[in-house]
Length: 349
Ligand SMILES: [Ca+2]
Image 1 (cartoon, rainbow, N blue to C red):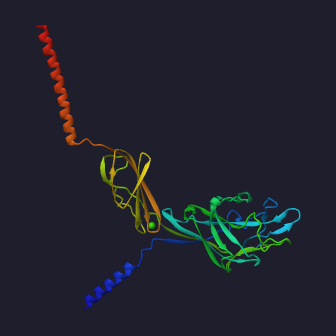
Image 2 (cartoon, rainbow, N blue to C red; image 1 turned 45 degrees about the vertical axis):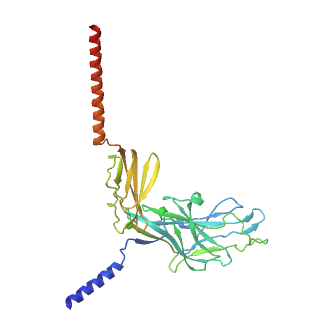
Image 3 (tube, helix red, strand yellow; image 1 turned 180 degrees about the vertical axis):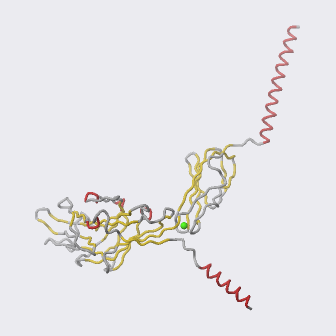
């Protein structure tokens, strides 16, 4: 009975262990740097379509990061002014291990409005690499850097945590990862702008805060990068025409599993794809490049490439036929020479 109880316990344990997934991801939640090259976070750039200039506004909040529009009035000299503030944020992402791939990333923040007049607001996120220095001239941003909208007031609530996904490929694992937060509607006049010079957007701003200070977090999920290995064909080798098995079974993922094997076979600039751990392919004569890309269970990829030459091998039978042909030619030639000599002698006689 005791023995049976132990077996039952072991089986139960195996079932439980089988249900527990292997942890193949690391998570990071990184606070934005508040001190990078001085007080970069306090450099708010303003844009005025009437003044066509920019200026740095003094930021006086201690624990609250304010991003918003202070403009929005009719000026008799300059016309409509519409100031948009941008704020730089950076995260120290250098601690991510070299052999890890970032598989997903988002920025989250807790926010509220300094002024509730605003009926429409978006806070846009742009990925920028400013390096270690930053000044007011660095604020040029393009649509190519666009990463997402962190919230939109017309559809979302107030005083809550909101997140926006950002590209995992743009995380700098060896240094700082930097973004610009920008209010929307830059350079445009809102439709609700009123004739008395004040629009509903007037003096609105976003305060980003938490109980202990402003809070902007970059949340990351990373996984150990898998390793792709091609076996069965040596790099730089000569192979004979015909079917060859491309062996990718030596590929591995240290903290998870390989879920996809994609083989790109290139000859004369033409690509062909086959899939699976160790597929067989019918190779013709020519120069080949094979690129194996593997993907792990969290979407991290790795690639390995080899080049080799395929030639037509002369078989035993072909070699025999060529030898016989050569022998016949030799015999015929000798025969002709003999014939020539015989006829020459006959003529002499
Ligand atoms: Ca992995």
